[in-house]
Image (tube, rainbow, N blue to C red; front, side, top):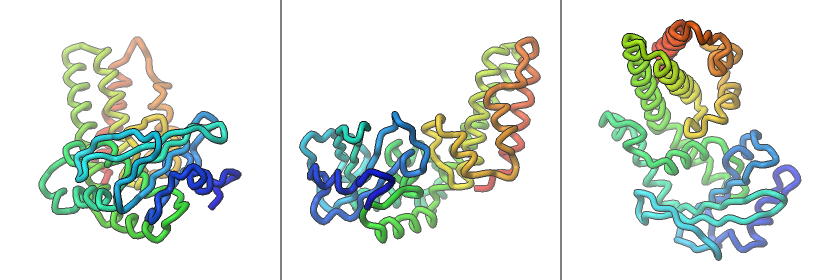
Length: 260
């Protein structure tokens, strides 16, 4: 399959980076979403049944069985390419971690999923299958039926609430500089929760938040208002407490309207 002008699968195959019997080869990340630029990497997930070592592989450790995944990086078509190799059984283990049974144990995403595990599930929801479209469709249905969304939204709401409490305490004590920073954190977490409710994950990478916002297009908050607050357009250095109070009010309003 060719995406745009680059035959991604052919390039990977020519470099002997697609193992025999590979279940799926997926273009993931910003390129798959149409958000990439000339400096962006091309990221790929390859799902296999057996462990496989690329010629110049790197190893990343995760709380899985087996407890590692492999990566292979190279340059082609003026971009850095990175292929990450997952076992199908590892994907199954990660999905088991976000079952409704696990969610009801009152745990949050940071306690359940490692960062790369969360990224895997997030990227599975929006990617381009170069090979294994049926495998991907089945996994997407499993992610959609799982507690993944509720788990991630709950984490963001909890982080937002913690930052709101910090900002309120700092306002009361007159620590206005710290209150501004805490309010900014609260805003980020609150907006992430709103976007995650709409299936726009990726809070680990705030640089894509505007893109995620436009993709989600939430009814309760316009992009223009969000962007005005995100970029502190109404911030008055002589009256920082007003900006902080307005932001915290917005965060609390979002929290009341976000559904798990």
